[in-house]
Image (cartoon, rainbow, N blue to C red; front, side, top):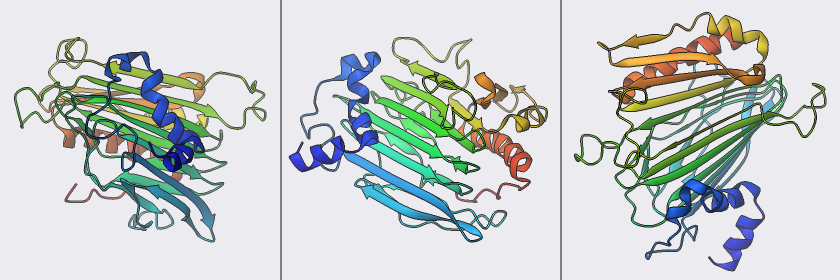
Length: 331
């Protein structure tokens, strides 16, 4: 790695964490060999986005944006007619997919009373690999009365892909974060070995309150919750009863919001297991009265997205009194 890039990464906590994430994770110990094409985390393989939102007059705005290839953002748009004060930002990858040795980092900061919606241009494809792995670190900060929707499109790990991701959410106890993650089993219509053909997918999501002293919590108290799952389909079959069963797509949505919204939202969420429609989903409360987690299994991605929209609609309507927008015809 060039000295300039090494210093740049070292001076940014999220980028530094992304570069060290796979080195420190036990489950990635078998994938430390370097690609012969280009060193991991090198120029063009260390993507970074920083997005800072703030309340300005009668709407929120993207007031700070920093980017490093292959990560890209152009500008905030206001296409949500139901919520015209909401800046909507689409994250773009100029490389088209994640390759072996890629390190991606994301910082999102939503200021006091501000709101934002962040998504991706399309699915995140994790390409075939014969060395190393791809890593992603996401650090989200939402300040007092802030509101963030981070709803990326699905992740598609190709055959022999290795991917590790870590999402750390820091929020004020009055703030709201809606975060979702969708994992496809692979390019199941592309090749017979693509269905659950990836080597490893490791994901951790954890959160903490930033105003611990106001809540009479110890500054050293543990996170609100930690969820981590490691999928190794070549070692432990996923398409069996008790895990994925006959489903191919997994959806995971997390809502962190003040306690007064939990029961009204949960009372409207009906669990479903419908073999005719090939969909199953349900919700439960997160530890420490921090929010709600909603999980979905489906045979195809559109139905999983539809189920997450069902949760998103109930959550936004209850918290803000505003409906979600109609889905775009091309997504």
